[in-house]
Each structure stands twice: as structure tokens, then as C-alpha cells.
Length: 171
Image 1 (cartoon, rainbow, N blue to C red):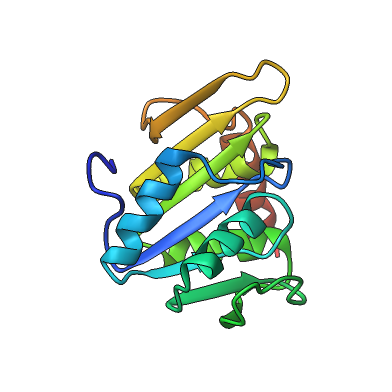
Image 2 (cartoon, rainbow, N blue to C red):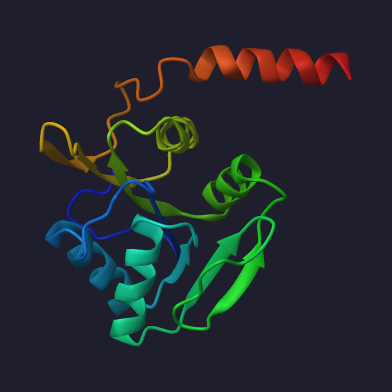
């Protein structure tokens, strides 16, 4: 989906696991962000601990200003004093609405986080070009590349989706 281009469209979403504790972004992720900066893309980023804060610190160190920090109830971190937008009233709504608002994404997925797995299924279902950096602190395994449209990232996604739809139909 992403291929050689760092990102596609006008809005790039940066997402990642709160368990990601590295002090620096992986080289492949930095290269794609730098490409988006060179293209003048609007970068959407969250404010949770972990990957989102590292993304923000990187963008702030670069002096990039075309950044929007998405949050739910309250803004917890905004390294560059950028524009902030409340995308929802809870984590799930914020994540879904930020995904809907982007044209492409870069995701750091640590230790098969369930929240990120769900987000990957949404990105895949919506056909959003996505670069995935997948890593494990237990095995130290790393895999990076485009989101695989044939892979199941969250095996329970469709079951959860079924029950969400059922609940909405009963209201």
C-alpha cells in the first residue's frame, strides 16, 4: 500500500502502542515521516504515552508546525504547542475518528497490543495506505512493511463488530 512513497494524500496519521518505550523512532519510520514533512503533509498524532510522545518529540525537534494533536477527554501532551482537536469522548472513538480523518498512516505495533490490532483492522478495511513497524519486547523480533490486506491483525475484530452492530440495532 505505501510502497516507496513515504505516505500518500494530504494527512498522515502517526499511531502506536503505549508499550513502545524506545527513546528514538526506528530509521524506516523516521524516513517516512521526513518524506511527509518534505511534502508538507498535515500530520495527525495522538498524545498518549509511548509511541505517540516519541513521534511528537521527533516532530518538535524537526521544528515541523503542520501537526494536529488528537485527544479524547483532555489533552495530556503537546510537545510543539500545535493545534489540538478533540476527536472523541473516549479512546475508541478518538482512534476511529483519527483513522477516518487520515489519508495514510504509520503505525508502531508493540507486543500485539489489542487496541492497535483493532486499529489495524480498521485501516485495512478502509484501504488506508499504512506502513507498519511491528515489534516485540519479549522476542525482540521486528518486522516492518506495508499493511498486509490478507493478514488478520485482530482475530476478534469481526466478532466485536458484529456485537457492536447488534447493540446499535437494538437501541
